[in-house]
Image (cartoon, rainbow, N blue to C red; front, top):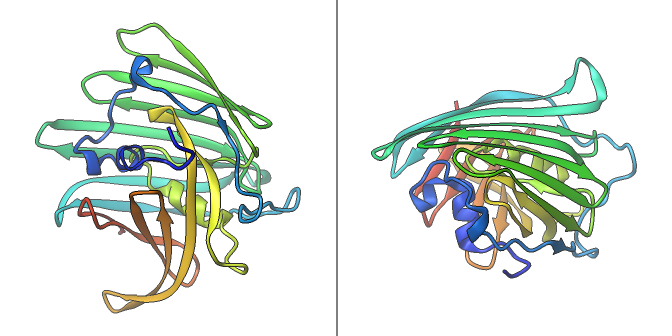
Length: 255
């Protein structure tokens, strides 16, 4: 696997792009890249303790070919008013002709966006769950898949500030936007982990300025890999209000 996430990996991240809402994890078929290093010239490193996160709560509608197929409810907030510990929670349900599936995630972070612990569960034909503990530059994953033995995998990154972008949990892109340096702008790279796919890699993110979308002026942030583009649109408060994947005709909009 290359250091940049493949189109299949990010398509799986969005679920709809490969026609499955929450694919099961098959450790035997996964060949993750264990050591991922960010580009120091473009990856943003915050001052220790600097607060980058912001409270947010809402619901996204998920559209495929213009038709509603599901929704996600999410919340990003400090724990009990403790600004030194943040939690991002989300729960998504997707309904496709092949059946319904649900996925939920709970991500604990430092105020500068560094992940500390991540938990996810998914339910479609089989139930799966996992926890990821972050210890410095190492992510330690423990996976349980219905009908299979527990599986453990370690991933080592070049920075502890890894971005979690998991399958069908779109509020993770709101967190990504908080890590992007809007003052510096330009293309910036980030180490990424897709826990449900056990896939690490790199993405490039770039602000492309204001765009008119349905009569509103929104700021465009583009996420790129070698073969895929994802467009993120933000309002004046830098809240994520829309996510487009042109190649898959998938659109996620805030209600």
